[in-house]
Length: 243
Image (cartoon, rainbow, N blue to C red; front, side, top):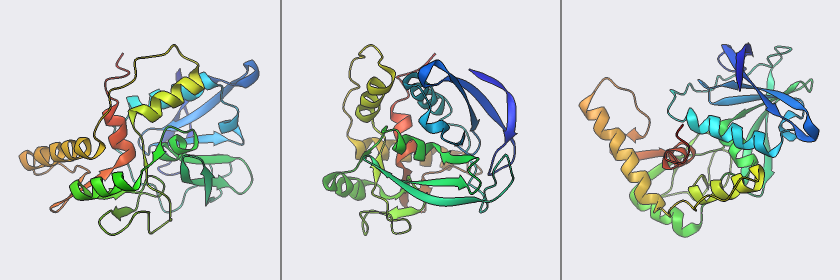
């Protein structure tokens, strides 16, 4: 559960929120969240010490804050312990390629929510037919790894970081939660047409923006709908965990 604010966020430098979670072998780990930046700070190797139920709890926290305003990451990220510059790199797992920001002095790493979900298997890579379907209905998405825009009418991978395109969807989440949390089996989430669901969400944002011209909402660029697949996937799961 959350405790008092702690160390500064590597990006915005505001105090992060600490969550004490169970670790493997009956220990505990303190994980630092910055919900404004949609990021998590892990001390050295903490991401590997999380017990299965802790991973499920982290995912649910990200889901709970899915609609929070998101600040773009700063050009220079700093270690909250030594204030040294974090070095950007990439890791690869079965579910995709994701960006990491590590302290050169091995104090820890900063992960975006999207990177953490790729690392822990809450996403799956899009198939070519799905890419073509989304391209015909949406056009542009944001890379879940680096955030760069990807025009699906011209590209089938991120031209900036070369990551494969990944989607967080109910089936991938259900599988990951069962694997990690060992929870009782829930009814499988209903299947969704990914492209149609994304279009509905993006058009809803567009309608709100027309009705409130001063509102700055993600998802609309001129006449082309733009979608963040990770954030959209969290939206598709909005009925699963409501307290």
